[in-house]
Amino acid sequence: MQIQEIFSNLLEPQKIIATFGLIGVILIVFAESGLFFGFFFPGDSLLFTAGFFASQDLLPILLLLIGTFISAVAGDSFGYWFGRRTGPSLFSKEDSHFFKKKYAEQAQEFYEKHGKKTIILARFMPIVRTFAPIVAGIGNMQYRTFVFYNIIGGFIWSFGLTLLGYFLGTNIPNADSYLIPIIIVIIFTSFLPAIIHFCKHLFKKDK
Image 1 (tube, rainbow, N blue to C red):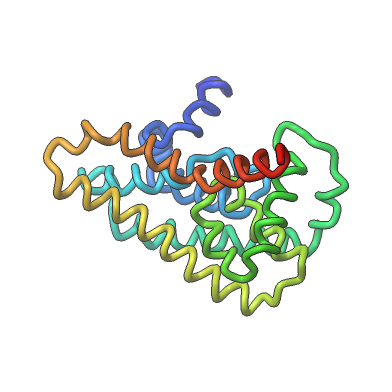
Image 2: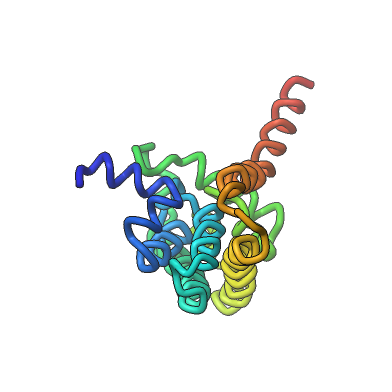
């Protein structure tokens, strides 16, 4: 399999699951939750699609729920410690293919505005989800407090989206016909807060 094909598979939930299975889903959830280069992975749509696949007996639902929850919490924890140890250098780091300084700055701005609840809210915002735990580490947030909100956010995010896909596939006839439109809606909804924030910024700038 060529590198370009592998990279393409990592961006599409159905291909991720078909190619890498349960282990692939768990690893990508971990990467997107706390590795600074994991912001481009499709976390929300991947969990939903994995839940749908589980409803068709293509993935074990119990292992999927437990595995994604643990990897989400572990990924955030890794991001926290990464930020605590090496975070300050990120803000002086030049932009690269995998890292954009503006992403870390956006996460820091969001974190400062919403405080502790950011650890929960950020779970449902692509890009911010990746950098929020790193910023928490940079800001020396008390680890006990971080873990508390990390567990809550990780549980709601992983169980919520996975079970949503599972129950859709279980209870709606021919649910596979609606899978792509629903994934598109989930992706759009995930980016909606960022779009609103951007529009507000443009409006203030114009004024």
